[in-house]
Image (cartoon, rainbow, N blue to C red):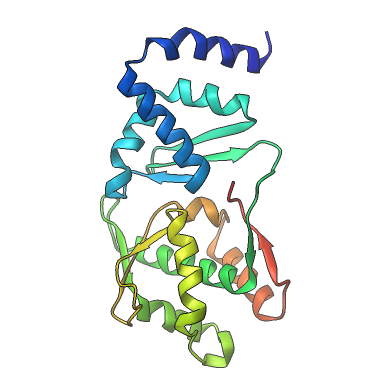
Length: 212
């Protein structure tokens, strides 16, 4: 029996046994994953969804396999995401968005060295500006709010970061979720820095990431 036939059989055998409320939660989470791709227990609004996915892991895996997606569960980082097995549906980021993403990845790694597993990584927006200046982005000129806000909002939409201050003042707190480890899936910080150098030296205007 093929993998997809086994997945269909599992869904037919077990999905019908769920309570109606559980079926509704299942459907909502499936649509949420297609929309935001990343769910983490670190985000208050996602904690119950994360636990539900773990409880019904086989059903979720079966459902997504039919649509040619893999369900990835990273228990140590408490992150769940989906990945298209044929590498379709990837999101192309603008050069500016890619640089911001890589800079936030650098900041996250530095902060992870001083926080415990249960703590959230939070920084000030001024920390991001400082890191952009450190790498020489825009010849040490600040990224304007008009350019910064769409990029930050994109990362927020995919559960990579979160923030409340829409005015984006320097003291705005930016929460960075461990999902960023699987967006910028690189083996070392040197690799991140090398990638940053490529952009700063005039790399392509668009970059394909692992967003599904």
